[in-house]
Length: 211
Image 1 (tube, rainbow, N blue to C red):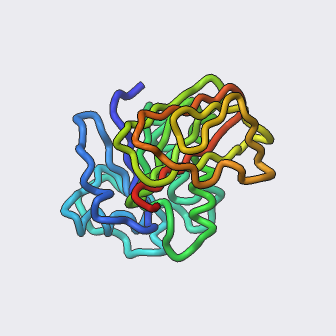
Image 2: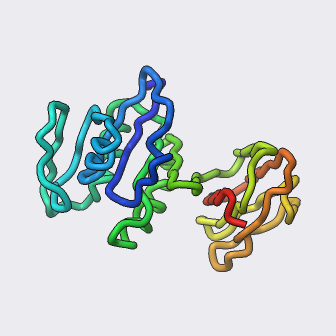
């Protein structure tokens, strides 16, 4: 198992601050198709570029490139994830996965978070002031007292039992259902907060400074 992160940059909306992450020694930066354009514009040469290049020209750069057929089951981003898993990575940071020209790809990338968790790995999607990640039964997540804005929790399983501490709306062993968006737009209140998931699968969306 690799110790670093597999950082994927897709062809969706990429905010300048998204590419200011601190790269660690074992990290790999992988561009999904036209994602390499945002990286090169920021002066970052990816270690790997994967795509069918239907949304950009074939990159003329000195790095590893995997060219895919246009007709395939996986999106370019999903193929990047599978390549990262195959290479032993279990921590993923995904940039440029939201927005863009096709909302279908945004939905696919959110669903992809579940695919990554099912494979025994963990991923975050970041897009400007938005961060998304998934928690499963038996897991918890702490939020710093410095967090601002809103946080939403959506059940991806039929139901999820969660506890929320030190949010504007608290909850103790409450039920979230994928049939009703009860957990939308909670708020941070300047305290260290926590979500605990007893069962089910929960999508967490933090939207900082969006109050």
